[in-house]
Image (cartoon, rainbow, N blue to C red; front, top):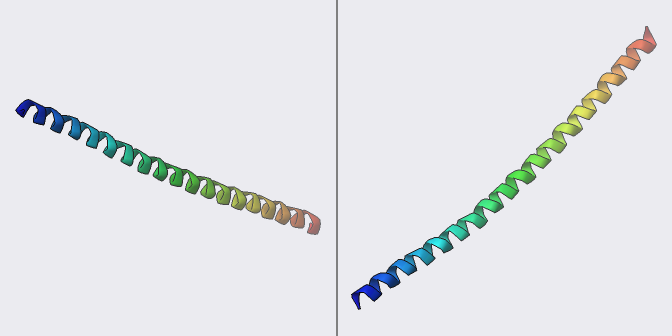
Length: 68
């Protein structure tokens, strides 16, 4: 009877550990997805600002050439 109780506790611990790992894996995947979305948004904003700065620089250069 003692061996059965020990075996059941080992199996129970293993199952609890597996469930805990699966739960944390979902949380980690969710966090990585959030990080990926934030990185995409940051890239889009930086790209927009870079294009806007390039257009401003071209506009200023055109104005300087036109007034010279």
